[in-house]
Length: 317
Ligand code: OGA
Ligand code: MN
Image 1 (spheres, protein in one colour):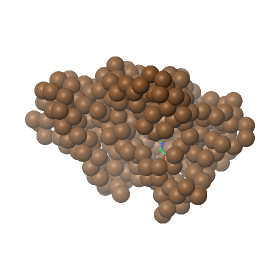
Image 2 (image 1 turned 60 degrees about the vertical axis):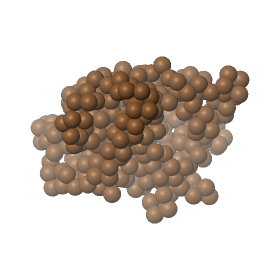
Image 3 (image 1 turned 120 degrees about the vertical axis):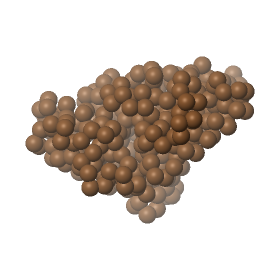
């Protein structure tokens, strides 16, 4: 459920007011009233949009953390891949054990049973339809995607599952006590390895590589516990339940795991979160640099299909 920090106000997650973004008249932007996110009206992503509207969308997403555009029923996979490129170079997993299914030859991924349909390019990853615990995307990589875009193609009623949640990690950082802020400043954490992650979610090619080479749980990747957003320069508590194995630089391994657990529990507090029940052709975009997300599973006999793309990437600092 949503917290109500920004209710009735014009203020986005970063603290910037919508009015201060000087958006073109065509764009109507309403903060969700929850702890993050904004709803954008007046923009059909399939249209040939003027640069000031595209620039406005980028600005809203950087300050809102998450952005919802409803009714995008003219958005083809090809157009989604073009829209994605406004946000930077498209991002793909690429180690060979973790590739995802694609919509035909278009560089847009499929989440859901649609991955089995004719013409789609199959991959190791078929969405299990299970719960996903809080995470920011692809934290098993050192250079992580800035943005993720989901276009809902087939949905299940929110009452049976499939709802997605996002959490405001600026707020999670801000609400830490001063002692904890001082403790974690400059610390880094180690994520689960890509192989362990892919194996954990049942990807076929990861199973093959684990049976050949064994399972390596140590990762060479290290991420900052406190991540600074390059646009807003706000600090986020950038830990996740899915990926964060242990914090380093605080005693022994057990201490590092204990601190990771404490920070994750805090970051997962309900008051930082906002949830969305999907309708067909909702497009939701989020900023992996300052929000976590998670979702509920859905019954095996129902179909939920998302077209998914990611863009922009950076080494977190
Ligand atoms: C993702 C993800 C959430 C969902 O695409 O990265 O976590 O609702 N999906 O399917
Ligand atoms: Mn995700």
